[in-house]
Image 1 (cartoon, rainbow, N blue to C red):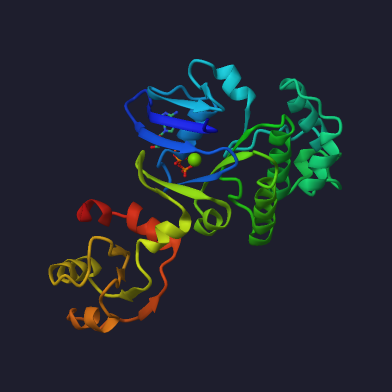
Image 2 (image 1 turned 180 degrees about the vertical axis):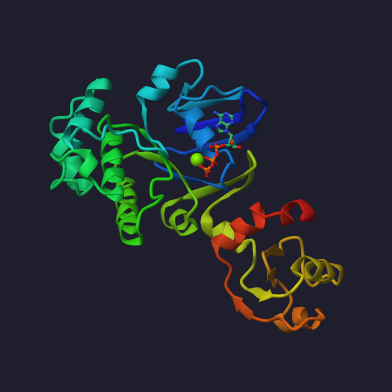
Length: 306
Ligand SMILES: Nc1ncnc2c1ncn2[C@@H]1O[C@H](COP(=O)(O)OP(=O)(O)OP(=O)(O)O)[C@@H](O)[C@H]1O
Ligand SMILES: [Mg+2]
């Protein structure tokens, strides 16, 4: 049995916004699965459907083997979610928030409280009102709260957004540590590619409600070969078209602003540069990153290349 299963999962909001257009994916038990995509790609809508707060308009989804539409209470019973927007009560202390959540879920918090506050570095602030917490501390509390019911599946919607780099890295360590817990499956959405690379066994890249890639981060990166050439030109779109015509750039080359990125594959940088009639302002070659894959798949050039 898969921990999460989505089959043609679809959401069209009232008013006609096609937020999610038939997603198909499976997440194994114990896997950390990343959902990446630009603003408005449909990530939160997907998390909403998997956590039963948003009703799918098509297809179906199973969490822990339970159908989110037909068995919402059972599906919810095996999962927990940290939403993109904070839900903890700011007037209560951290401890009260965790206990309240545990009671609502019929889970005892005794014993777990100590373990969770230690694991998430909350021991010193757990008895302070949440209104006095920093953004990162509140985020850690929300994760502790989500874990108190001992979910099999944890959904994290942009867990590190708005956090300073140090806190972000600390939180990433915490999340990476959670996966050591037996059989905890995590689905995490993020805009930070380094995060996905560090945490996720596999990532799905979602663009305008559809999945445009699904693979291990390293495998996605390998698609662009071992070296890419990057340079700035006045008219990157026209330059790209010219390079494609001469077969010096293929469909995976893309532009972002004034920058042109060309995966080299069998060509040399000199070959490609000889093929353009411009004096590029800045030229560099480097190893492709997951960011390149993301930009290539979610940029405007996608439509042109397709
Ligand atoms: N309640 C709603 N009614 C109508 N349209 C909605 C509603 N909620 C979201 N949408 C639209 O659905 C699309 C997907 O939104 P969603 O929040 O799932 O994106 P997201 O990938 O989580 O984006 P972000 O990275 O900005 O959080 C967007 O176009 C959004 O405007
Ligand atoms: Mg979102």
